[in-house]
Image: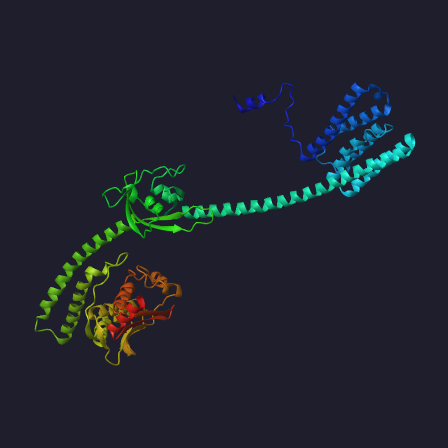
Length: 564
């Protein structure tokens, strides 16, 4: 069937399109309910009177009054009250007052109790002025009725009693309606506040859920029965859990080792967390339904329960699979590089030894070859350790303690870098006026000096200067390297000792580097119980200061006491 034919099928046979009926407004339903209630009571009374005392209908005013009320009721059903003014609506109960007055006129006020209906209507929805006006109209009708038909003391008593009753009823309904209105307004305000609070809580919950789902970490909360109370997307995906029923056992299996033995239920992460075990980066291997192995570091922490809330434990699982793979690749690369570098270094050292055996060498040539030989030997010693940096740098063994004069180390380091400094147009000087003697590892100190001098020359522009200094300052040996290089920003200073970090100025310069040297320098200085500080100004230069205690044994005792 085409669109046109389907549309035609919705048109009635008379050709007039059906229009949906508008729902009745609350105001219209209230008006109808009050007027129809009065009309129903009048109809019932009329039927009862017709059965018990038909002669009462001989009074024409009775019929006129009933007809008036029925006419008002009919008009009420047809008038659109949705946009009507309060004054127009008030005309209905006032018309009812008149209709009831006509029914009761000359009837010894037997129908006067019907005035309760319009009085209740006006008292519930209008101000006190409107209610007094309605009571005044009723009083006027009763006064006219008393003058015309009775005029005795009994009629006066009936007049007073009816008016007082209607007044008390009206005041009671008026007060109750105002209290009810106040309660409604209060409830509406409370409802709005409650809804606002619920909306804020819902929004915060959504933000927390979105934040957790945006993390690469797998996060979950488990109660003492081992049930998942909440879990982010990463956790559900990692453990292959159903999002609709996260407590359904997942398809991923935990192992104690790679391709090892599967963990029993009592040793699984969720069970241990439910038991209250506190884990810190505990290694677990996970085999997922896709046949992939994941290496996880699991951390658990108990959460403080609020009043009425059950105790729970937080589980944080970090997938370190790629990190482990990168570490294995790095280890393989280190082994290959170490092997491949040792071969040419061995050849260099061998040929240098042969050349040095030549008696025809000039003293200057022999001095230069000895520099090459010493540099090659140091390189050969560092090959196996220079690439074994973090993520898991091993602790260095206890450095050998020997009495070292730093001045010859400074001179040797500067001598080895003089050609590089000259090639870059950088002036390289020594500022060590007196010997600096203390217990240290000479090889490691030379490594510190070489790293710092190399960096200073590398990042100092042409016609700049580098000054390498050493002196005794109180109970410390102080080594300084001052350059007039490119410097770095304060933000970069906070990360200068981080592994693989390079300052923004260094990256923008295009000068190659690994970002490992400063971390190695810091570790060597700290292994001597020393400290290293770095100050720098972008575009002006950098000063590196290493302070090493002269009495290392005393420094170690102080450090042990502070740690205790």
